[in-house]
Image 1 (cartoon, rainbow, N blue to C red):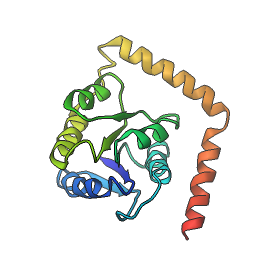
Image 2 (image 1 turned 60 degrees about the vertical axis):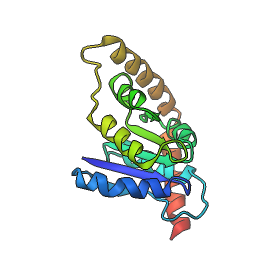
Image 3 (image 1 turned 30 degrees about the vertical axis):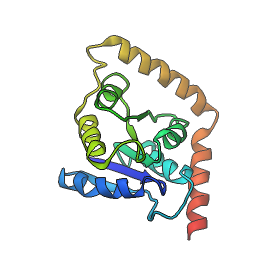
Image 4 (image 1 turned 45 degrees about the horizontal axis):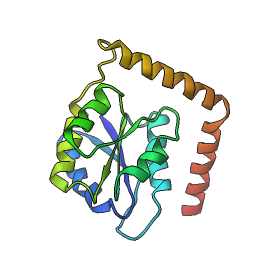
Length: 171
C-alpha cells in the first residue's frame, strides 16, 4: 500500500512520529512535506497529498496540522477526496466504514502520538461497508455525481496548474 503524508509546522513532529511506524507496517510512504517545524501554511502540503491520491500515485493519505480542520477543509475541496477529521476511535473507524474516507486528518494539538498511531491503525484496518449497507453506497454515488459536475467545470486543470506552479517556485 502506498500512502501520501503531509503536514504543516504544527503537525510536523507527529507526521515524523507516524512515518517509521507506517514503514514498519509495510506501507510505502510519499512525504509531501513540510520538512521542518518552521512556520508554513498548510494549503500546499494538503494539495500535495490530495494530488497523490487523485493522480493515482497513492491509495490513501494522512494529513496532520494543529487541529485537523484546516487540512481537511482544503482536501475536501478536491473531487475524489473524502478527508475525515479523526480524534477518536469511533470517527476513525466509521469514517472509512460509512464514508469510505481516503484521507485521515489529525490534529497534533488534539491527540498525542500514541493515540494518533492507534487512530491510523484503526482507520487503515476499517473497510467500507457500502456493499452490505446500501445507504452508504447510495450516499457516495450522490457525492460522485456532484463531483462529476464540479469536474466538468475544470477543477483538475486548475489543480494541475497550481501544482506545476508550486514546483517551479520551489526549483
